Image 1 (tube, rainbow, N blue to C red):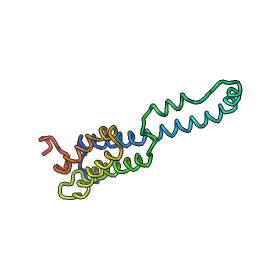
Image 2: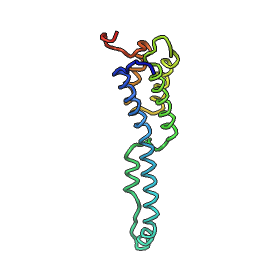
Image 3: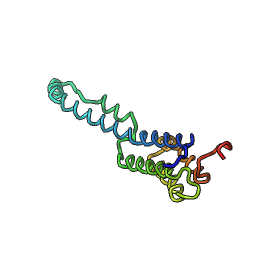
Image 4: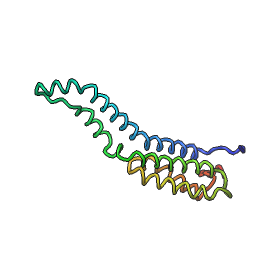
Length: 155
């Protein structure tokens, strides 16, 4: 590695990409855990619900169902989209890191980074897309200024 330093803009971009990947992957994981918890409790409560049903009482797991429905309406619907969006965002972040401080090279990476991040924003939806918006703007600015030195002091 050469002696080039990372700018604060690059550190912010990497941090924002990491937070964006976490925000894209966390809802499907939580929804899967809540679904698994509901199934396990459903099996554990089954004998008692049968006995209460014979007695005329109705017992269901509406609490866990309401938790699963209330967290995020579309979070558990398409986990493959979330995984693909997180992968696109990660590859876009890696392209940005590879393209930093190389004004004459890495043109493909500088062009591919905002495209991949934009596709990830579209695939993930409105809320995770807004979390990644600063990284998207920094990647576009990096396309115009490859060194990510936005202050006049560094030039």
